[in-house]
Length: 320
Image (cartoon, rainbow, N blue to C red; front, side, top):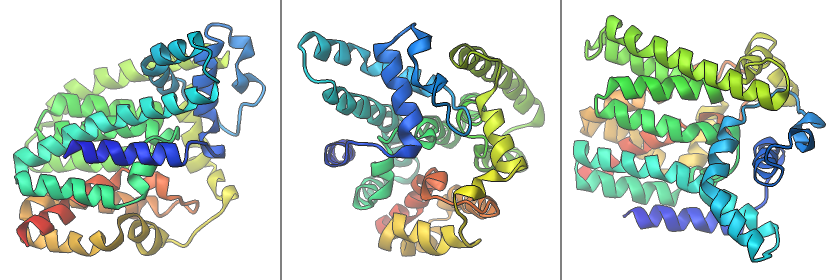
């Protein structure tokens, strides 16, 4: 079944290879790492920093995966445009790996039928597989979120907290709502204790925060925590609304229905017929509700909710 996910992701890459403004920092950073390497003064972001600084850790990971292939293309004197496809494929592979692991976890928990329907539903929807290879800050966080889901469903709490801390502190601070709700559920059901949470969370937080500050201070040539500045700009100063605002319920009546299509109608059916998916669907729904308070809204901000909602739809299909 995994080949369906891979093929559909490749179709998106080759039909729509180029990027838009929200993707420009990560794509340019990957280009500079691959082509300028240690010559920081040639990096694009020093002249065009953007509104808020972003982390280089995502571009470094993508560059590491794609570097051997880009080097081969350069040796063969293949035009640089081809490297864009390589980078997009590398990013897609980085996201597909934990998505496939999550599918296998779903199979272990809910059976082969639900696992198969999860793939069918995912490939039938446009947005998730489209965003999967786009060099957005949200996409950079997506592999860690999918791994966090995988470890959560497997009751591997230490790894779940480590992945969650990395996603929140390095890439997207608002994920503290989604992953925090999942953690709260584990605490309330006593599958995880406060003591163990502290044992896992404190070292993870210190390690990931130190890593992003050290690496990104080097690349930005000043002391900074990128995601901290993003949170200050978007949440405290509430400046994100300068790029447009949407009604409070926009995610529910517009974004999610467009992203999920007709499979959205199956989510409540799955929650009713297969009670084991109820704990999987409540955190993303409450996350979307909480995130609705920010006036500036885009589908990519809540893309992490789609896999868990698709599990409920897949369970409905399997039971029906």
